[in-house]
Length: 466
Picture (cartoon, rainbow, N blue to C red):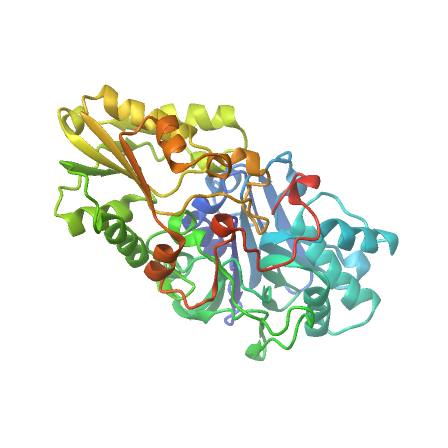
């Protein structure tokens, strides 16, 4: 998760407003903390804090002037939620020209890379991957004397894992992506501004036309000389050339349906997932109901394929955060009760196809099945828009312990009994690949355990993620 944005104004206009507009559009990607760093050409001003964007920035601040900047919304993790781990991270001018960075992803060799920098005298304020990335770049640039592009290349060779990052300096902005492009990062142009963001919806709200995705291992430089793309060389000889391994779970849950992610419209992919689930489904149902919001498009595809009425039987309170990304079970349980309210007339006396995007821990769905039955449903048939989640993700999703994943230790039959559904049907990995129209360029590790980047250490040893 996490959402990043960077804005560079060719007209020299202040960018804090467009940055905040983009962060509002990506609030779903992180609800723990947020921040903005803006350069006025001499210094980089930073404001970040724990909380939603609307709380930390109730009005656009006048204390952050400048024509280039970046912003971030933070996804909560197993570690403590403290301002030191909020992003962006800024390296002060005491060690050279200032630079700030916001990133989405997880570094899998974090401890080793951090220890090397600390041994060289580099100090850390928190335990966040983005701080490691910017400190690595700053060390290569300020201490070893490399150009900024070469310093970024050195960091790419040193750091393993997932990172879709935006780096800002006094007068330039850089979009940076890991060699496997695991997490999304796209860019566009409009009204004299270059914008880089995790989701294209952040471009849309700023009247910017999407140009392209940042390619695997690519560095894109935005500055006084315009936009310059630096294609990836053999960033890591041990892995060979840069090769996409995009996160398939972006289509299942993370991304907004109106976003174009990895070159595909999320809404269209989710409708194809629903149609796949509906094909050859022998169970008779009277109504299809999504667990809003990420499964709404899946349920629409399911209902259209089967010719079954689609109803919004569960009304979501949008002022309650996403329960999956709540950092502890107590908050997740409270969130379910506060988040959904059923419409009895949709369920009473009917056989219900209840469509959800995934089952991670299973506790939320069990509560929802009970809720639907309490409203008079005669049968509840659960359809899941992803394969069985069996393996932890080490590239930016907070599932460090396989024991937290209900699919890792239980059969589909056992999960069905656990959530108290009449029937349960999952998407398959092959089916999801066909709906995404993947061509061998996606990561399905959370479903099949095939990790595209070597795991040199466990994320939970550190207890935090970006």
